[in-house]
Image (cartoon, rainbow, N blue to C red; front, side, top):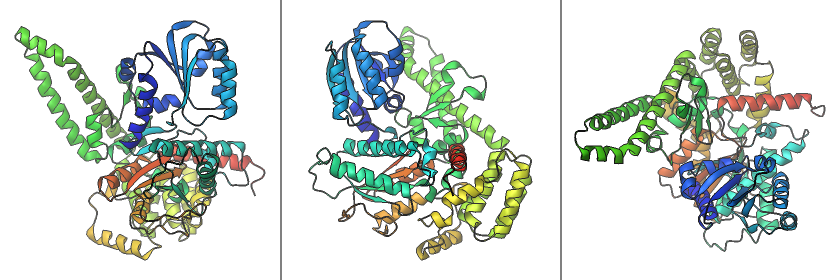
Length: 568
């Protein structure tokens, strides 16, 4: 519950001590931070009768002096300007200002100078500067995520903004946990090193007093890695519930937009998928697609039993009982129809795109050797009319990542075939991926064929066979966590920042992936935490990826790199 609880606690503290009718004023990022941990009905219970965005409030002149304004904003230049204007002409009786991260002294002076009518009652820093989508998984929803792929020589101003936002997010997580970590980073990544050094500077120099929690136990570990060390995981189709919904339909801030799926009633066009608010989802979010079907059938059967007993109303007492249980009945009805709709929609997509066929090949490319068979299988799928353009591209990328050194001639044949079958994908995108995340750029043992231990493990797995061909892949993150648990994470691959070293085994580890996490990885973290290894892992990233978002970032980075004259 760690991250969700921390963020909820901050929102609670903002709202509970201010009595009376309130308006909650958020910005485009804090609206996500609040919405994943607090429902609308919970806000109403705290007497929040209006939720507004700070930029739209700026446009309105209507006075609402009967309401108390609770602002929860990121401390950005833009937000301070909005506040300056709003405090000069206050519309609300009182203003309570909460910021999701550290304010600069100059910003505090600007706010004090603007508050001539003395409506501001308090100014506080509440460090909920991250989106806690699950108890052990947070994201920062950074729109310009593609920037992390740009070569160092390009260094656009947006890259510094990306670094600043990540440093802010990571520092807020540690302030919320009340800990200061030792910091390590992936040696082969310039951006991971830059973020690690800037985070260390903030925690140990600029704000060392704020991070000095006087704790005696072993410091937690912050490990900063680069998405390009494992480009395979975001390219794969997924077959466990949460990851599959994100891959095929899309999840944003724990909400799923179903408006494009056909004639659904208005209240079902956007549904919430949150392990905090939906017991069925919490119990099944990491289960395989086949098992989900069985679980949903059981849920439908249970609901039908309840519905049947509600039809049997004979007496006044029965009627009173039904009225009492009606809210629960409605909630159950909504939940059943939500999960049935999602699974039906996903089954339709799986059938249309022949994903069982495609995914079996993808898993082979990710987990098993055999270049000749792989080439033949990918060639056949590229010729298959039922296979969609995006699936063809992903298959060629997975083949290229695996066999870039072994079969350059066949690789060129696949590039040409892809160009003729799916002309919408510009030639060069697969080559750009190899330039970004090819074997020479990676630190980790992605295919388990560099390290003797991994080779042995793969052979054992091959002899034993796999339970499910569609979910045999394990993300590189799984190996990284195992290395940390066993104390085998090599200093040469993941150096420490500054003169800090880990004394003993950490109890808390935050792994931050620059470039974004996946739900397959957050599942690995949740299962690892459930195994009681004595270490609690938290996963964070700049965004939550599915293959569509990963490819979009890749295309955008390629476009900028091409147009930049500095790139050699």
